[in-house]
Length: 185
Image (cartoon, rainbow, N blue to C red):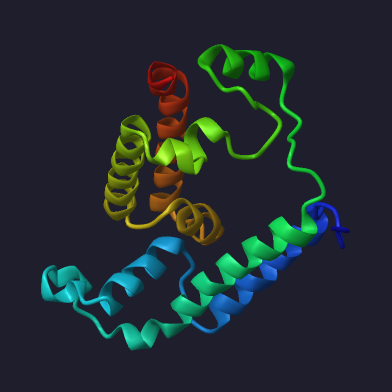
């Protein structure tokens, strides 16, 4: 299959993100994936069990279109805009990941040891997915938003709360990478 484009450079992708953010601000919409998931939960009837989800999800239908756009955009990017699945990792990083048990470090964006269907159906893979989902869900709710909402929207609004949340996200990522992940593999 022939690819239409290579990776987009920062001076194309950045202004497009800026344009999207401007349009969302202009129309009074908030950006963030967690708010979209709230809409899906409310639509599915979670408000019957949890008061947090008792709101008129129809007012946030645009969130569902946003999620659909993310999925379609990801598919288009993967199928027609990505020329190569390998990433340019530092050789020391590849060596460190290989020592941890990752066999394809740098060859793909997502390591099979975590993201393959075969891994999902192992006890370890299933537990990692469940625990990670609980932590991400709790952290997103506790922080009042997700990484995209705080890092893109909150920081562009000069929100001090978003700055604290983003610093916390990075600290959590460093703790996971250096202190927890080595013991999982």
